[in-house]
Length: 358
Image (cartoon, rainbow, N blue to C red; front, side):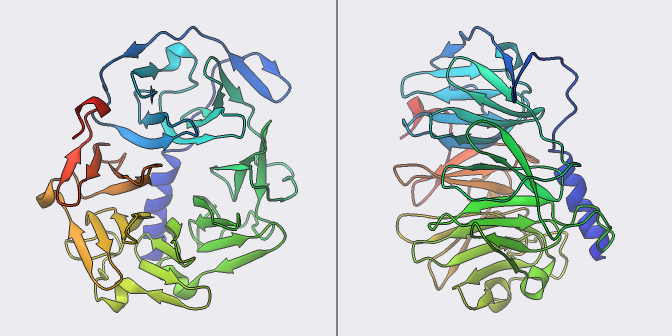
């Protein structure tokens, strides 16, 4: 049963990995450059579905990435759209970050690229089969998922592949990539936490690694990691439920509140087993997005469940993003319909563009 579960999860992840690069792009040292003119500004937000990533940059601009329609930037006045016609390596944008220079880093369906506002620059991909680089930790490093037993790190100029030093190429429980990283999180001390496919959580402080895998997290696969405003940690297992960690003790709150579904394939209504997103609002309430049972909030004592009955278009919630004003954004999974919602405290509102918000 465990092998079947892991195989299904692995197939799902690989489907979002890098597609093969068939285009020849001029190489300069560690990067490939593609220059295109960009004139795609509109007053209307066209991405009504298929949204799989959201990011607010240091200047307050919002960026929305889609499964197959490219990228949108909102600068406070208008929307600008980018696709492969404008230089994107691929129209799937699954992750968005910003470096210290203000460049936007995008994980696409065909590798990772950097955007300085004018030019998309596709970063050369390191060889994940070769000798890994030495591990280090810097406050300004950006981290990305890769289909290997390690992670990609961007140091401001190039990508490095870092293989976990304790991972090997042998099969582990029938899985080729037990340390495949599904979630990467930097805490308030700038320590890095990596949620893996089969090996729980790896904590890295810049010098040492520490493995966290209490009762195998129910199934071992970690989809969500979050540190709350008290310094405690929360981990979302894809089948094993919600774990709270105070720095000493792990508590499975799903089991404690009798909400664990014995079938790890599926969360029926009222269960909290497959958690894909975690965040916290300004009032201190925790929020959890699941693969099957909608959205949950937790005030420290009581869990409240929101589903399609409450206005969501799917019970698969895999994005909970908090912007600079404290607003939470809820994304209905890329494997579902990719619709964004906001919450006014009483009802969910389908995001239809900033100009139509209440």
